[in-house]
Length: 488
Image 1 (tube, helix red, strand yellow):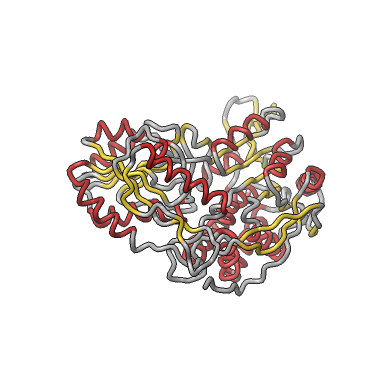
Image 2 (cartoon, helix red, strand yellow):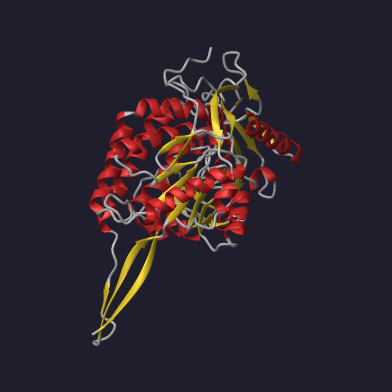
């Protein structure tokens, strides 16, 4: 039986200008582990999105004492640090809400996602006082310098796979730079964003500096279209990213896009095999495979194919879908019935294309619930041109391919529209460095998979998008550079 939740799940309202506002319509948010509604959440229409943007603009343009954009940078940093402290103090509640809404194991929510959110806000709290321009000696007859100023109102649209974590990747740098934000969480997973808004108020964030509008695609589209939004920061699918680019062109908004991936995970024969097997398992089954940087294409050097695949399949069988609230569970529920059916459709398609099913491949039942569970699935004998190797499945499905040498695997790995991440497993450090330069990917891991830190930039090449989250690089996307020339 699926465990009962201890977290309090409240009906969701909109958070606009520091006030909680009823929606004109509501929609249910579903527990993926049971298929049942957790609560009803407000759906913001275009007029309520407009109200949120106007609140953010008012807060940004406010010239009075306490204005977020004019507040001393050190004070902004203190507020961000207090936000981190409050997340840490409420970490169990937030983790449980994330697991209830998304279906991911509580182990991941509690010990990976939430601690990183704390780190992100503390990292950008430190940056708040270090965002500055330069003095430039351009001419003896002039005093010339630059200012780094916030861009204004930021629309942050985040997906359902890491709901609060990916929100923090936008909110941290945006707020540190003095911007105001309208956050639109995914309709499948709005609960932690709403709870976060309460904590932000408690931390001292002024009214209007953060607004949260929940809803579906139309809510997001209204935010992108709005003429008074200066920048859109989006993480999600490549298809939606293209729609955002087209729409944002009408108002020439700044746009950063972190999109899909089909990341190659490359194992050479001289790699530490057991370590690489664990890395391959973690690379595809962590987060149920609902990870943009998932190592969903596994390239194994032919001479170790049989040994590696045998160990891989044996290891995958230990990862049984289970109750997401059970601390021992490592494979939770797919986020929605629609996504589960999409993943099962890819599995069926792979069989039709001639890929060999080595493990899993079926919907799973956990404790008799109607939840959306899928067995960890591995295909062998995959060709790089197959859909299972080219398209983003976004589920616990691994496509295994083979290669002969570094030249062949470099070509195969790059033969894809995506370029978000990649990994290399080898004992030859020269080969690792050489191949990492050739791979078209925003992140390359060597002898590990999925590691990250708030200080390291994250983003993609090709149709995995442009711009970077995290690190100092992210600050460039949330500031304008102004040149000032003073004639002497």
